[in-house]
Image (tube, rainbow, N blue to C red; front, side):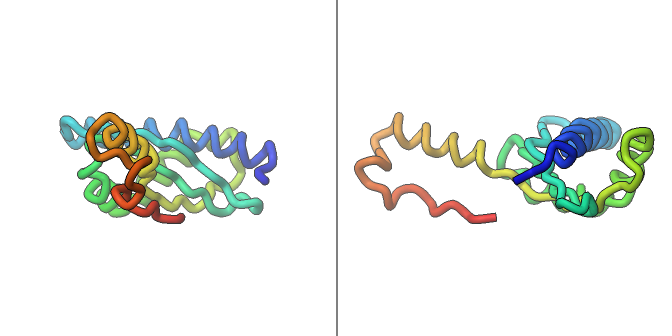
Length: 130
């Protein structure tokens, strides 16, 4: 169960991390890839924040995750600059791909098509637990 403080910090980080990543993509001249931060969950001691990103198109997810991890310290520094009046200590940021939108999309396509997973559940891939 998240405390109000964790939720508040998560919300602040979500907005700022999204801004920093989108700005970095624009500066790098990346076209046609949309990255949004879907959720940030913060540990109870506020030392670690898990950042979940949704990437469109889906097949670019791993590439974007590698790029983000390569410049992790710069992202953390820029977010720390933005949040210095709200946070005493900047949590360590860990990045993950949020595949829930892709998962929902696959379900909708399957239901609309002939391969209805309600009749044949083996058609859907097993969801990865995080």
